[in-house]
Length: 322
Image 1 (tube, helix red, strand yellow):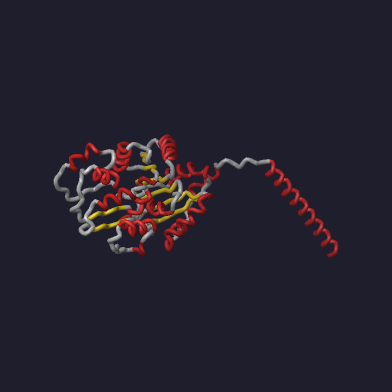
Image 2 (tube, rainbow, N blue to C red):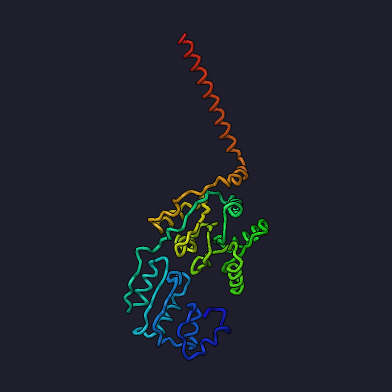
C-alpha cells in the first residue's frame, strides 16, 4: 500500500481479512481516515527505518496509525541501523504504555568491518575528472555514486553517459515521478552498471551483488554516511566505499567520525592515487592576481639579498683563513 498507487491497491482494502500489510505511513494513515481499514485486531506494527520516518514528517501519521490499534493487543517493533534522540522522545510521548527493549544497542551507528573505505582528496573542480578516472581504472562490478542534489544527479548522468558509451548508467532522485524512479531502479537491478543517486537509495535497499559505493558528495548529515556505505558489505560480503574529500568537508568528516566512533572509517587506508596522477597534472593552474605577483617579487628579492649575504660571508671567512 503506497502513495500514488490507489487504483492498484484498492482491491486489497476490500478484503475481509489481511494477514500482512506492507504500507507507507502516509497511505496507511489516509486509508484509516477514510475508514478503508480497521486495525483493532492488529497484533504487530513493525516500523523499518524508524528514525527516518520522523525526519520525513510522518509523526502525525504514525500517531494516527498507533491510535487506531488496540493498545492492549498490539506489539510495536522499531528497526533502524542508526539511533537518534528524536526517536527516543517519540517513543516516550506516543508509545507511553510500551516498555521498549533495545537489542544490539552497543552496535548502533556502526559500519560492518567488511567495508573497506578509501579517501580520495580532491578540490571541487577535480571531482568530475577523478570520477571519470575512477570509473576507467578502478571501478569493477555494480556500484552507486551518491550525490546530495538532484541537479547533480542529472548533470553527472549526462556527462558520464557521453564519455563512457559502453557503460550502463542509471539515475534516481526524489524529483522524478514515482513510475520513473521504479523503472530506473528496476533497470539498474536487471542490467547492472552504475546508479547515480541522491539519498533516496541510501536506506532500505538490498542489492546482492553491489560491490562499491562512491560518495561524490559527502552527505549533509553524518547518519547518511552510515546508511550509504551500508549498501555494501552486507551478509559479510566484501564491499568498498570511496569518498571524494574536498577542503570544505572538514566539518562533516569530524561529525562522521563522531557518529561511527570506534571504527574511524574516514581514517583508514588512503586511496592509491598513482593511477590518477594525470588528473592532478591536468588541473588548471591557479590564475595569479596582482597581490600574488607582488608576493612573488618580494620573495625573489629576499632570496637575492640572502644569496648576497652568503657570498659575502664566505669571502670573509676565506680571507681570514689565509
